[in-house]
Amino acid sequence: MNTKQIFQYISYLQYPLMLIALFYAFRPYTYGLGLKPETSYLLFKDINNVLVFMGLGISFSTLQDTTKTQNKLSRKIWENPKKGKIAIFAISLMTLFIIVNGLIGYFSTTDSKLKELSSGIIILGIGMIGLLKSAIEMFENHRKDKNVAIEKEYQ
Image 1 (cartoon, rainbow, N blue to C red):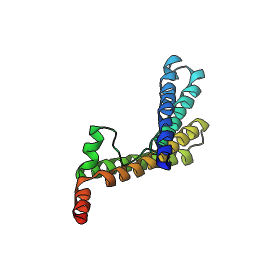
Image 2: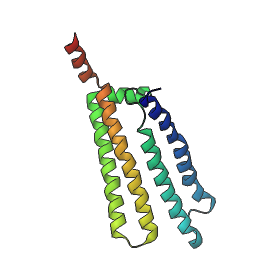
Image 3: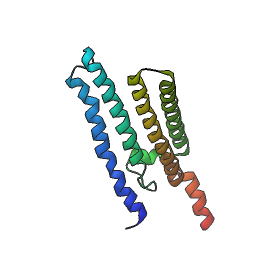
């Protein structure tokens, strides 16, 4: 077993982490979405847990083998140079937006609930940085225009 396979197996931890995030996403519905004053703290806590576990899940998903695509849609995106660049640009903007908002929220508030929420947003943003790195690797490994040029060099 090589190192790449070990990381591929570790990447499967993304699924239980995303399920935990999903659990925390639906949990506020059981106690009224923070409409009662005594449950508003629980709402912020659950939202923070969703962000933290989503960030961790995304981080673990970036351990997958980037030389393989998972489905036809991702193959269509990463093989096309134009679509791949658009996808990387969109992921970059989302990552920047998430991290900047998390940092602004963290440093501009004195409320402990919002500070915790901002920490969760920052963790999600860090996970998105890993996703961006994987997207760039997928694009480099699968784009047809670059791979055709490389194949012509070796012929």
